[in-house]
Image (cartoon, rainbow, N blue to C red):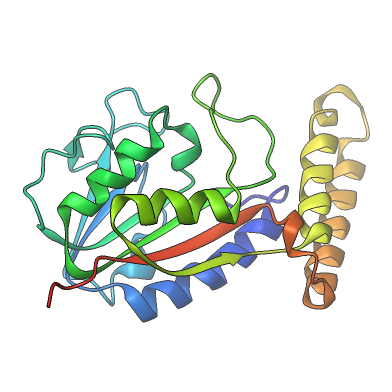
Length: 220
């Protein structure tokens, strides 16, 4: 959910996920770790059905969940979906290899997986926060499961990562001071400045998040 303290990363993320949806989404889509399906409207023009999957104890509730299951056992038949969406979930899974193999199992040949995972990010949704990923680690996970990796894209450089994390750090002190509005104004200024400067920043090894697109190749 976008608020004044995370406008920056959500703005960048929305642009990228819209492009991925337009280019790769189709047919029946499985949204693993769907939560409240925040990207439902983005994918609606491109998919016939949006199946949300999440586990029983999800912090986001089950109101938008269609299948209560895990990323390791979706309960779906082999090769039953055309697209898989999985955003900001992989870092919360103890067994990422098993999850990616399950994605491969349920995806139809010719289908695509659209997934994001962080490189630099603070602890969140504890204690279920286990890993951070390099582009090489993500590529290994997907190729090891049988996927063809089409893209591993960093969504920012150092400026965005530093600016956004600085805002999260400042927000920790917001409740304890009388001039909390000053922190909100500073947070907005930091994020707006980082968004502008990001267009010139090429320090991609400091990205906060990677977007990976992987395909299940059709057998000849």
